[in-house]
Length: 425
Image 1 (spheres, one colour):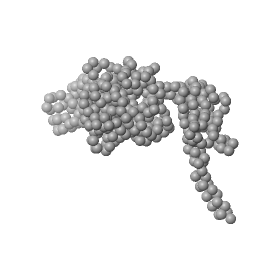
Image 2: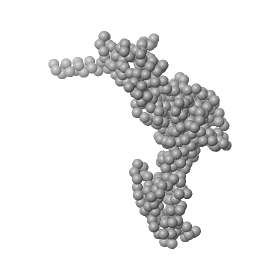
Image 3: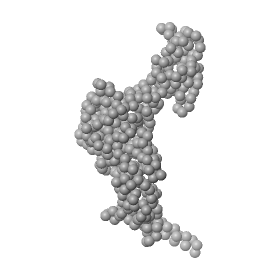
Image 4: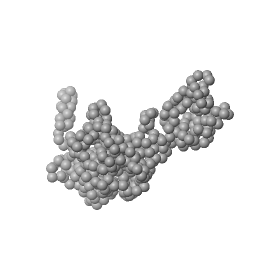
């Protein structure tokens, strides 16, 4: 009898999983975020209501399709929505109404100049000494990717700072006391320069670099704080393949001179030059997996959409048509059709939140799809900025990844959630 009852209960529980209301209940989120004057929708035919106290912050109503509950944000605040089934409350969902926040989309081609924190070691070389070929840097345990931040107690900022120490150490026979930044740790070592038999100069057996340059695309900027985000991915050193640790940097305007069209297995590239006036339009304070960030020194316009647009959180992004803004000729920002193939409603920052596909025939004809230098191109869907183009699929240049805008805003130092919490408190 117990076995029979157990089987009946098991079958009943399994059957509940196929009941529409139960499936909807399982899919209901625990939290909803919605901006002022915007609507967040939840797929559910289960009736929902809220208390009178929170109606100043938001209201809830059933959509005309009968399958969706719409939460209308009115004023920054928070509360709960209660879902009732047969008169019994079955689920409570927290609602947070965020202050209206808008950014001005970019699309402009920009030149990027980065100055590293100290000097970056990008390779070893052998010095021709009287005792054969040796690399003093390698003997001292200096690794490719290390950053020399200090020599003999003196801060090192650029390559020219290093030379006087090398020659002095060579003449006196004293070692260089190096302080290295390696990953997240600090390493100290002693390096003895060796005399090169070819020109009688002292060498340290290291290739070093103190700056990097390239091009990319502006994603957005906040018209109030002038904080901006661009590229959508980290800038890595071309030799070490490691992220560049930024001391400071600048962005300037750039002009696209030509396009190397992409094909399967061979990503294309925008070829560009820094604009003639080389006017610095902003600084760079951060180089992260989500792009480069800093503040603009002046307002910039793309000539296409120069008004502030609302943003979409990751859960609002839908599969379907969208637009990107980018430059493929000179400095003219243009709008092109794309499709959001998939989107993950992320709860935590991640760089690959969307898959997009270029559908615009003119852009495909011009570039073959997503090319290097297009990274950072803002993606706009239903009048909202939803993210930026980041990476191309090597075997399919028509498609690539995108990053959600909320994570780029966070990296730029713009916390849309903190603003809401401060206003509520």
